[in-house]
Amino acid sequence: MGSILEVRRLTKRFGGLTAVAGLDFNLGDGEILGLIGPNGAGKTTTFNIIAGTYAADEGEVRFAGEPILGLPPHQIARRGLMRTFQHNRPFGGMPVLENVMVGAHTRFSRNVFSRKASTEERDRRRRAEELIEFVGLGGLRDADVGTLSFGQGRLLEIARALAGEPRAILFDEPAAGLTAAEIDRLAGILRGIAERGIAVLLIEHDMRFLLPLAHRVVVLNFGARIAQGTPQEVRSDRAVMEAYLGDAAAL
Amino acid sequence: MKRIAWVAGFIVLAALPFFLGSYHNDVYRKLLLWITLALGYNFLFGICGQVAFSHFAFYGIGAYSVVILLFQFNLPLPVAIVLGVVICAGIALVVAIPATRLEGFYLALVTLALAQLFIVVLNEGGNVTGGTGGIANYRLPPIFGWRIAGPPYTLVIVGLLAATFALLWRLDHSWFGRACRALRDNPEAAAAMGVDVARTKVIVFTLTSALAGIAGMVYAFVDNTVNPPIFGLDNAFLILFMVIVGGAGRHAGAVIGATLLFLLPFWLSPLVGHHHQLIFGVLVVAAILAQPKGLIGLWDRFSK
Image (tube, rainbow over all chains, first blue to last red; front, side, top):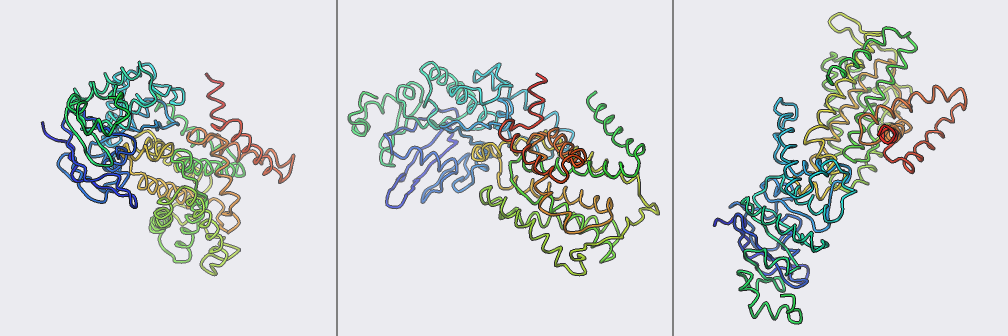
């Protein structure tokens, strides 16, 4: 399996605190990789570095073979690496369909005055409608995003990221705040995304959600990788047990 | 079908001046110019969410530029027009590039300062700007031997409005307009979707400022006089009021707001004299508090 995303020796320090310490991992096409760890392990910092929100102190991040470290978020999206937000960030002034269409921003040809522009707009609209169906928001196409429930808002985040035709999507705790039924639905959607050949990187807290879903798991503690492997391997790893000491029930 | 309706609408707008007397032609021209300005400002403020107070100053910069280039530097009309657009776009770029990199509040401050500075420059400009008295008693040079005046010049303004509207409508109904609305609603999420937020803001500010400048050039030959009081801050705020009262973010809102606030003083002045400003103020506060989507929002609610 070819790696779409490669993270090497990634290091980030905040003053005296090393939030990420020489982290290495790969993400393959169509793979669901979980990045887990106790609170403060450096998951979110890692996520923000890959997505272009933070700068790193050392290391390398390659996407589709090219270095992306230091690129601003919009250029990372343009290359086909999309993200979702843990706290939903919809575009409040637009209905659901238009929100999803913004996700396709980088896939339009530049010239808005060309004859091609209106057919392109129509094609993208049809694709956006398919994606709305795919995530289970069918029938809410024209709804005001303010009327969506929190769970529906999360699904909108996913449809919007898919509209950019990404090769990989970073999910920032996608199960956070969802009901049990919504979490089941979400797992199905994430599997469907991976089956399309899109790589999925999940930053996740909820083990009961992550372990049955992920193909592979990377465990962080104090910014460093303490284990990686299949969910079964990680579950029985000594270092992981110790990191989660007192919280072993969660595994 | 829809296109036919639009064309028919503009034919009506174009035919109207030939049935109006010279006083009403003058009112009509100014109404069309205000609508043109409001459409541009709506794109900047309503659609792209940038609070700027320089829109009317660019109208003045356009007007003064074309007059100075034509009559102080004796340049031919096409050169004066092109140079005028370049001046407006150039000043807009110089203001926008540093200002949009900062948070929105700073754009408001910088553009307010620009609008004030413009008036100072006009007053202190000596022979070039004509000082406090401005420049008057000039006429539009002949174009291919023809002096455009009267209703045909009103047609020029209808053409300006149609072209401005067509351009802004096309942009709004494309990925570009969507990117503008997205960065207005949530800049961080817009960036994550691939929108270059700073670049898009600079493009919109420069484009709408240049459009205001072009409208100003056309205005310069409506009254055939340019002077500092015309381009003061009162009108800078009036344009903001027009867009808010009509409904920010909607083209129809800009048209309704501009029409209402431009025509209102004509009806109110006999009743309340110059206190119509007070009524505007109340209208704006009422719109913000009770109907943030403006009159067009009210219309939507009742037409459903």
